[in-house]
Length: 322
Image (cartoon, rainbow, N blue to C red; front, side, top):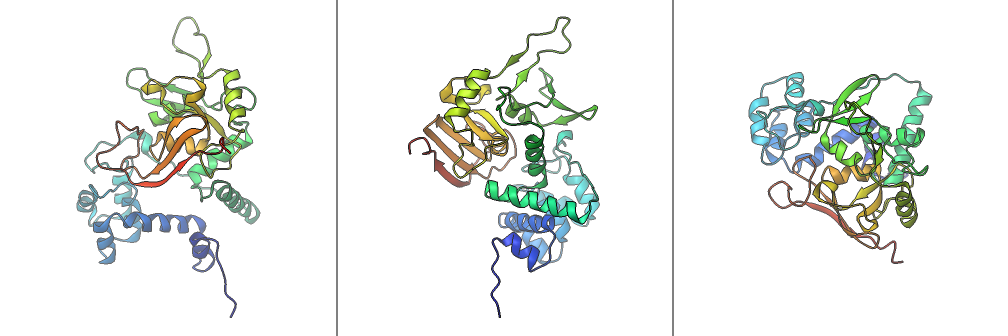
């Protein structure tokens, strides 16, 4: 009998167990989440909760809040659980107010077998490029930026070419999309502000002077210094690149070369959403630490959630010392 080898657990679940790619990814995500949610895991084992309900609860429940979520979802249908979870972020209690920008949007498409094969190949190529499988939400903007010129400043302009507006008082933000405004997380604005064109107030009687976060000359200097590729150890991406302020601008970080580094759009979002922490000075004194934050928000050292973070990986950048 021939021995069949699989490159990953996802591949095994697809080929040997017959799961669709998205289903396999979700099953694995839930399994990992349950390792930190013992009460929900026990409820699933006893048959008190269906796996579909556990799948939704694992999106928002944390060790500190899982008991509260279990209490309000027992006896509820899947649709009721989905409605209760929607608009909440990890760490929220069921009684916390929902945030409109956290409501997920669903896209349903029908494609031919040939197009479906292309979709799967895109996922495989992206996974090989990033060293991990991307979610659909991560893959789509990555492909979009590559297809429509988001080349990370290769033409001397900022990487962000999407219209975003923000209220200066309440800090709520909206992205202009397809003829209407869609509310987005302020963290998206913080991420974009690292390398963007600022149009000023659109309500002013006299148009404001257009400015850029980083000058074209400085952008080219940083990209050339970093080899036109992401500086996160292990990442090989050379498209979809952003300039990132190591010390956030909101914390007083400036535009000097030592405070700027090149990272891909996916790692850039990871930084501003608290999953990746970059410290030090560019180019050769940087440290990178991947974390599992308890709360999905714009996280810095001073406002991390209570309790010690869980480091996943620590690495130092040595690419410039070789």
